[in-house]
Image 1: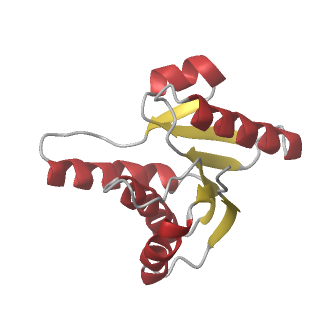
Image 2: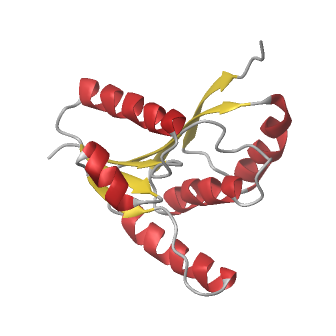
Length: 156
């Protein structure tokens, strides 16, 4: 078996844009190394398995109150990330500041990846308003093994 890759994003919500981004990431990975062992972190693992026939893990866990859900999710995610060689966080505007919890969930994956000693690639679209705020969050946590592939969003 080849490289163990985990892909994190807003997958499993029947959002065609995010699913198209995931399909593109999968094509790129398979084009580089067809022997990769890929795990997708999904909001709806059963839907993701049906679409891609790959291993999946839950993206987040809801266990009673918010605090317990966060603690439980961190424990499960960290355990899963330790088994990987590479973490790819990919999607549309994953780190935009329009949503209150979304950016922190994706930042959590990069922080836990760093704590597990893994390389992390973040590939997403950013609008001007979210660059500074969310980069500061990642910088504050000293995400040094994190590579950004950013495409600007243009309005027409």
